[in-house]
Length: 474
Image (cartoon, rainbow, N blue to C red):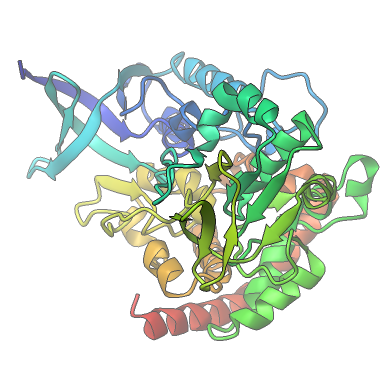
């Protein structure tokens, strides 16, 4: 039976992952004590994609550089430790508990967002659906914080039924069978999920017959350079702000191939020298060594199908090449997690000023949008802060090689704009800032250099971004 419940709240947040919880953290700074916040998510509990991602996933960065606002972790681990999904989910729950000391949080888990309407009186009517009911939320403000909208992967379908097709999420339940079968394992994908999967299986058994099929190939930032360990951080490594500024300064809207070579020569690692795709992921040299030394083959091509040809079964690649595959082999789909979903383009703020959307398509501050946009929103400056927008999903489809450099340029351009709107305290409390890995003197030196070049950089960044928007009709 469908029942239409109506609830009045001060704020409705749709999405209880990293972006949504950063919005909740911001709300704590601005809303009065005991203000009501409806926290909505289609999953069973808070944590977003961390609830249903593969069990062996680890953070890209040291755990303290991944948090909600400036909230501290409860872990007693070495500073370089990469937290696992269970630790991340526990941290998120601690963060919500801390916010609940100030705000009344109404968790609406297993509720999906349907639509919203802004009324003349400024109230936003939000319509939600669960398994058996629909619900209306009447909120003074709405934050749609789906972030990157990452969903669990699906098994790949093939013409042949002589192989086992699974996803990373299904590996733990099949792990012993995979190892005992001694059948070839083909990991399809070249991104962080593929690296995690190969690394995990090779750690379990270095003799496993693993093959990587990496598409165009992905290159990663070298974690050892971006986060130098121990005392090395005092004089070695490169801050994230410096690396991005170098890329954005070199990029002019047309020369992504040149910037690719620059990044690969100075900062990157990859399992294949001709890798073309970069999604700002991190990998260490030791992780890469385990993968490249353990894998039997690394194929830079796309797998289109697996077909039976008489008594033989063959892998069929997009290039037209084929090769035999043993019956009973394992195929693990590690493709398409980031910026591959078909989403409706949505502006990051509404004309009425009482709704913002942190989403895949209009994401002006990349990974930090979930933190900074709510602060501008709660200060009622969202309509007066001219952030430059680009549809990231459309851009990646038009030119995947240019995407990371456009995103970095856009982030830095918009960060300059934010500096004129937000107090330094708000910026300092963003503890997911990778540069906070470094001692204070290095942070201050890099930030000062960035600000000294503000006028020159902002002009160049804007020129590059407008060129990209014109070229790809974004």
